[in-house]
Length: 394
Image 1 (cartoon, one colour):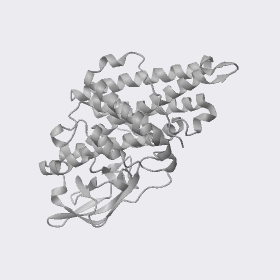
Image 2 (cartoon, rainbow, N blue to C red):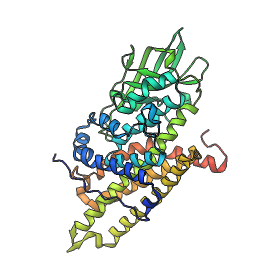
Image 3 (cartoon, rainbow, N blue to C red):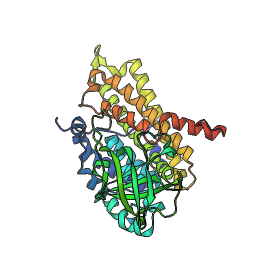
């Protein structure tokens, strides 16, 4: 397949750029130009072949996309949360799988090691992960426990200077190539504990998940633990319970909220350009009312989501954002993006299903993003519980 030229022009209907600092805009521009140069020309090919572009891991590390909010002394970027959001927006504008790689590395691997780890763990793992020398993954979801992680069966048993880890995790991004896995398991007191498992530990395998119609350019796999000996110094010292993994997921969901709007912006931009160029009945289809309705609704929903994301970003920077506010942004962004992709596909007609355009790839990717890190329905119930004070989960 011929390399695609990336003509993307970013929509900003209510001049939101005026709310961004110069540094935030510079961060966005550096990632946008990277995506145009390195991701867009090759990503369709990788998606068609269902192959992970492994070379991007080092590139993302050099660009500062891994752990951008982690302090620089530990190998992060020392940036604010809006900069992080803008990075994820631009990466997912290229491909959801590329953004997933960065989200997992920064929010689900580096963040818990930084927040919950010992100083030794921070010094050992964070610089290697931040640079892209190592790839990491996050093991919470199990074959029988997705939306209800509290029911997990993966467990650790005390064995002197180490623990014995048994169990399995499923739907794990980065797993097939990860050197490091942050894994959540129950101890003998039934407390959920986090620990760092390294590739090469005997009994630890990462089978690849094949035959996906979604996130085809992302590496997905399982984590299987068969009597794996994990040194006790690899356990996070003080965090117990679901608070640990859910704290990581809040950070990752924030990145997703921004990322999916990147995919929506790409589909809108593609549809707008196509509608102006595509002639039917002797005029561009952009001049027909039904096409204008679709395009007008797209830009309206993108603008609303951008405003919500920016405001939650401000609250994150101030340490005031609640997990429930992040939930709303994640669910809203996913729904908006999926609807925009479908409308964009209709505007493109038959061309919308081909690899010549990114629309169908985005649409298939978003089917995963709607589900992972809290499904659409679960996030609705999180908001519902927040506003009513009543728990609908049980």
